[in-house]
Length: 169
Image (cartoon, rainbow, N blue to C red; front, side):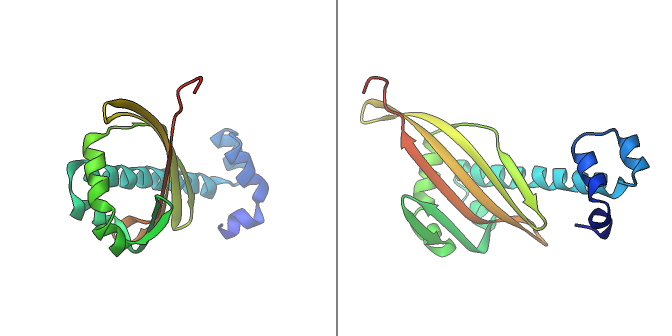
């Protein structure tokens, strides 16, 4: 928060509540609009980073996927926690194979930015064939990122999913 925002919190709230730009300028809230633009740009960059990670998995590009993970990244899936190195040697090959054969319908990504940290959450729906049976599942993803000199990097991923039971089952 800038010194201006601390001194004029009402102006900050007014801009965020949607007053016209002219009204906010009258209150001296110009620095806030630049902050909002910065958060929007960060949100766009965070979404792009998460999408590049998924694209790398789908393309079978393990180096590309790993380049987006921070050195201290952790991956939470299947009830476990893996370091970056463990993920690379254990789950990454399976995640690539899965991403290449299954194409989930992803919901919108919700992004929150707090300074140099941001997180993106989303859900997905998947339909696939397993041993001749149609299996539907819903998934959730939470990705935590930090701003680095190289751009946004992934520090944590949490994936969870559940099978959708047929109605009446």
